[in-house]
Image (cartoon, rainbow, N blue to C red; front, side):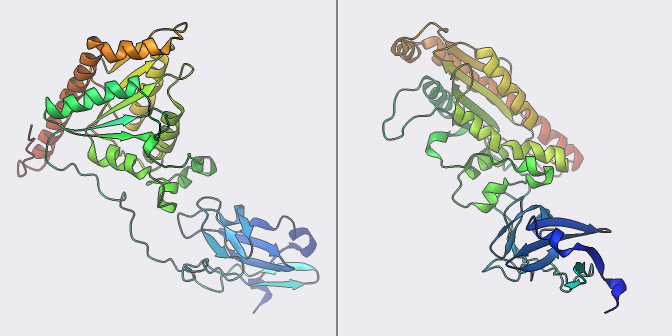
Length: 364
């Protein structure tokens, strides 16, 4: 092979540390590694979503992609055991006069295994039927030793009223019954590393955040989120959930893909300490950025103030307050009415665009 096909990338000794690096030759990106006295060179572009392999790290003889942890043999480019056919191109190397040379033209080709789409990778479609309401409880408690929760109580009243009096389909999701991982900051690595579905959801089949994604993106017309106040903020479990929902908002930024459309959000906020408006403000900001809209008077709240340390009386107040319980029912009603308005408007527009050829009955 002619020397003109090879590129001098520098003295051998200068390339041994760090053991993993990214090099570019023209428009070609290569992951160069050094381990056990040998260099290896493979394409620097991961098969998954184009992550920078050369910016990853070594796990034995495998390069680990920094975006989603896919692994490829550092010398052959083959995938990890069980996925050998999922391979990236290999580049030839040679040492001459103490310098390392690389052939930018790959020795082998790229081969991507076909993977079935994740169940959450499907077109957005609302099936005919009544308004659907999902309640999300963010209260943290030991499931084996449950206690009374004021936010849960009002949420349950709202959900039951939606079902029994307002003709909606409804379900309740309690975050403390789900096992899901914290957001691991894939967006911080690269905007395109934060995927839909969430990178963690795609990699970890035991992660139960998919239940939240399914409910919010595909099933519900209305979401009612209930949280206690903890040190002037929503519960830590609430924040754990919304950090994982960042992938929904990022689709708007990265791909101009809006996953939340014609959906309504409303909130229930209770606590022994004050700061209701600040908690509500954060919730409004976040859920509006996802695409949710809000009904008139979009939250109900209760707090006895900073000095009210007698929490047992706070519980008694909520448990016996007809005003708060009626407020929860009215919150559900306002949210459902808003969802009905949005849905009818959307379906009317769709019928016009289709020339009136398709009807979308709302069985309410």
